[in-house]
Image (tube, rainbow, N blue to C red):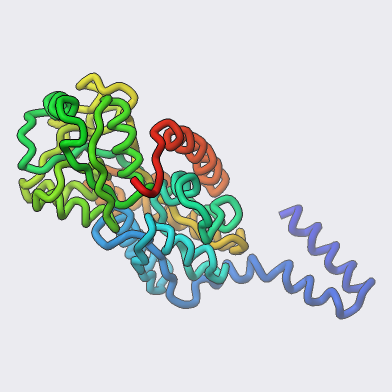
Length: 337
């Protein structure tokens, strides 16, 4: 409050010195907080850069429903797929920074793709205003019912005996599932044949159909296919077993050390969006995530709400980007894989 009062005093002095020229500057000084108070005055769009039904989409739709009730405005989810999530991500980067177009990104959009793709239409460091990491959950190793391995150890043994025999699907080159799958192969010392899709739900659909052998994916996206009894989950990539799948061991329990992967889903705005609007969105996301209805739904998907600050979220993106850059270099991963 003290800093804002000082700014106002300086602005008033400017009016006295420079007349009407600085009236506009004073208006700008107060426009941000005033705009945040009334925002949103019309529907808000959340862009999901993957197909409907995947974990990113699931989290976005749950959040959109909760926020629409809180704001009294429609919060619409639009799926803009393609190029490993880059098309939808780029659309938000170039959108008007007024808070009415937001991005629900998976971690890979922001921490992996910059190290895989040349000539991206956006720069993660400069083109976005991080809002908050919304939800986090462990990845799982799922296989088709056609895979006869009784557990993860047998699957690894079979894969070692015939490198490239098994296919592994993902939401696309550079997606969280793709990199988690690469991390799994590295930790287990096996080679699988990667099949990229235009979204996680498409990969799980082909897994259920027996068109591919395995998927390392988000636990939330795997839950519905699991209920079909046409896929099996061999392991979770978490430090401890998850309450959602209490009978499924962790990969570490099979001796696959180093394979701990959590998928996360964060909300961002275009760079230049008023900080007061960013803070308002983050605060309201935190408020709806702790509501029993929403926390229960996330728990049913094997995830939990996070709602860290914009500064913490930005630091997380920077840190994980450096980590995935190293994995990409060591695994020699390219967009041609």
